[in-house]
Amino acid sequence: MDFTVLLVLITFISGICLLLSQSNNSANSLYSILQFMGSLFPILFIVLFIRSFIVEPYKIPSGSMIPTLLIGDFILVKKYQYGVRAPIINKVIFENEKPSYGDIIVFQYPQNKKINYIKRVVALPGDSVRYIEKELFVNGKKYTQKQEILYPSSSQYSSEEVYKETNIYNSYNILKSTNPSQDFEYRVPEGTYFVLGDNRDNSNDSRYWGPVPYENLIGEAFYIWMFWNPSGSDTIIDRIGTSLD
Image 1 (cartoon, rainbow, N blue to C red):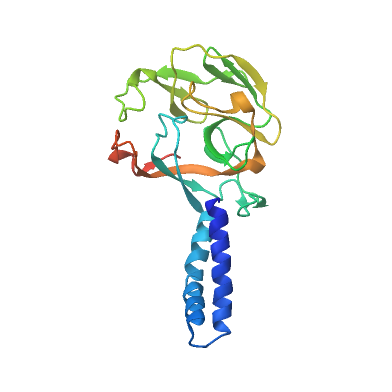
Image 2 (cartoon, one colour; image 1 turned 90 degrees about the vertical axis):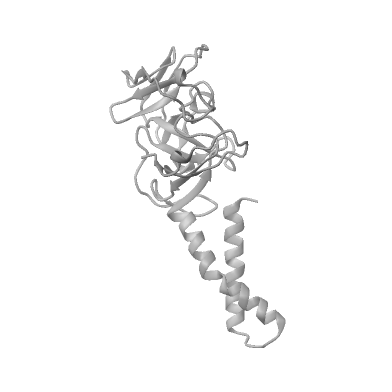
């Protein structure tokens, strides 16, 4: 069961117990249970409110966003950034900002909304996208790439694969291998966003299943608050506290 669904269910049950305990002052064991469950309601409600409308933690399970995000990163996501949405159904209640170039977004996978993905926005509604020999063009303008000689802080990538990609708004590091890739051209439909993983040759993204509809958006990733790799191969303390804005 999805954690949000479980949290909503437990909060609802706790609220019912609180109401029942206030209308029943007997000293039996059932009243004690109701009183205990009801006492948890304020805490559960606050947690549910924060996770649903303000900020929610996520763990990075794959390497599709290397080198920006590593397997084992725990991130925080602004839930209100792209509109206030109802828990579980993810329906927009109040609209806010729209995604911009370079935003790292969490969203419901268009082919299975029960799965959440994280990618980078590279093109907006109406944009023309071309990917030619691993070079990205948006509306005819090339996203310039310069190889970065970095000493990798993780065994999850090597320094010779790192490139700095720059558009007119910001820059960020990506990975490219020497393997050939498939070229394509695409125009982004209205109300959707074209996303790519920073690990360009190892990412399942809009190149394969299309753009992300606005209604699938969950929020914008903005902070790494913890790192833990269960394999024990990486212990990167300096990643904790890294801003993604």
